[in-house]
Image 1 (spheres, helix red, strand yellow):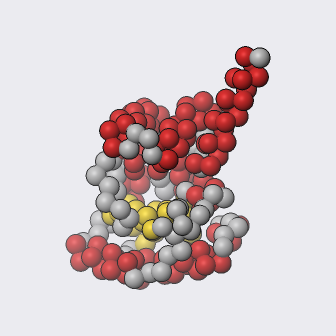
Image 2 (cartoon, one colour):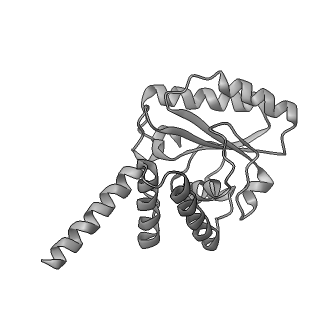
Image 3 (cartoon, helix red, strand yellow):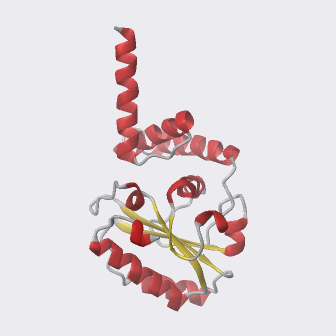
Length: 202
């Protein structure tokens, strides 16, 4: 599947190396790339490289430490590697959980709910079966609750930041269309809605 993606050579090499590390370090069953890398909106300076891995069982403490060390040693052409590891049983559950996150520390579960919901539409298998054969869909009510939590979090922590405003655009677009857009797409979608309202008001 990854062969079908128009990825920069350095990004493709990084993903191939990551899959090799995962196969050596953990009982890997599947891995998926999602986010801006598959939406055509990847910017090495600002984008994360978003990857899900699925393992056969819960990892031991030693396996987690070993995986973190191996992943930290990788050279990634992105702001950071956001690797989230699920067990097969966790992936089959409708409520998103995570085994391991190697990106910035995340204490708020709503981020994982939203990322997993968005990945349902665009995730591409690096190895293993298609996404829908492994991951249960995220329930709509869970997405709505996570969106509300996200708005509250951003209102409190970064009410006027670029990321906060673009995430609000993405949320609105999903509520209107059912599609998860990249941040640039969401901004363009909102501008078009504003143009339509201006034209209607003239």
